[in-house]
Image (cartoon, rainbow, N blue to C red):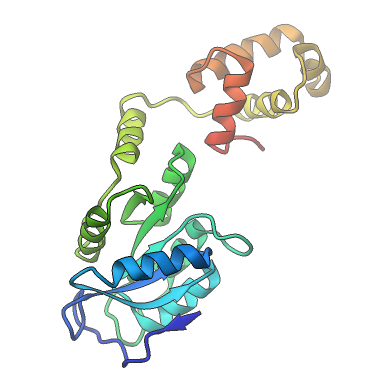
Length: 231
């Protein structure tokens, strides 16, 4: 965990004393952090004031440094993940040098529906993929500092697809059957495990397939894992 010792953060609007966006970087890969630090060092109007290698470090540094934006990875190895770190950062009272909580901009390689949903529900302002061009990253950081949302095109596509085709939530019984399905059980085995008839299992499977937009058992399990629907 490290921070810029050049001076205390200020309570100014995004940009502080220098007018630059004060940024806290969180990524558990040292090499990735080094690359991002070098990249962001060339970005006009952006000042990296601290870096964290874990979710816990990010929470602590956000409170201590009062950055304008936290650039947050999702998968952070041991400890809390980026979603939980985001939730804690935004739930904490503003630091002594800030009038509001920082904005959190997710930067990750993951673009599953479940990851996107969890990040947005935790309060993330934007969601970028690491494949974005540097100029897009710089622009998204500045937008986040102003409270504007930025989504990578693939992420925006997934969000729009879900809005256009909302599907009902699974019932507890359907989740039970899906869990048995993920274990590789057949209809007869599922029926025995849950004390229901095979016909009932088939009926529930049809509803599960319809809700998940799939046609096979393997497809249902794959989508369930992606959306983290399994118990």
